[in-house]
Image 1 (cartoon, rainbow, N blue to C red):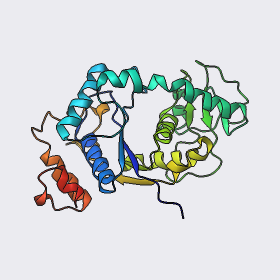
Image 2 (cartoon, rainbow, N blue to C red):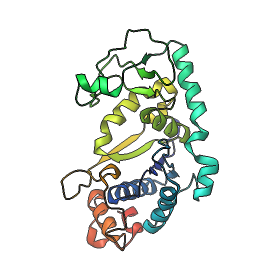
Image 3 (cartoon, rainbow, N blue to C red):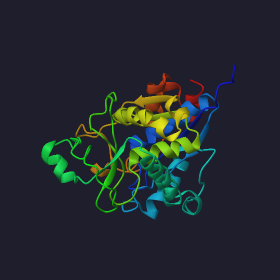
Length: 276
């Protein structure tokens, strides 16, 4: 009998704004669940959207993780090291080659020229209606994207055939996240419950890209923190930054304790969560 695979997880902040309390809770939960089983933890800064990413946000990620008391085993330890060795653009060409190989080998992909506006005229939620599925379009950067043909239902995924490679010649989130997790050997993913459909989609995609270990891993989807308006905290909604309203991470640790089955009154630091 083969020994069980070691547990590998990741913290995956995006440098498109300052971290908020929802991000911090996710990182705490990921850290605790990984440490409880003696796993290894990556820091993976998701800077795929280069237009929204800023150096000051990368710097604040390191400051905030240090403030939370979180450490990791693999990945960058400084903003400079991140940019020199781990930034997304260093992987883009390899990802592109994989997708093009699948396309040229007759994989379940098709070129799509539909704009977001055209799709929303048919479906206000943006679910792809399948216009280009059988069009036979050639792939032309700047004019067409590559979509994955979903010929079977993916539980919870209601947006139709997803884009894997965008018309501006970059990987879409679903692909880039899957390939990054595959390359890191990730088999424990902790996400907000709003990303459960993305998990289902990525697991269905995994065999196409040799990511069976990822697909067979453990996935934990936790409740979301919401703001005063009842909407989930997000950078796009200008959620207050992590330390705008907190002078100490202990309230976040106590909140995480409730989700982890630990008595919040017994929590004085991160170590109390690991032993729960």
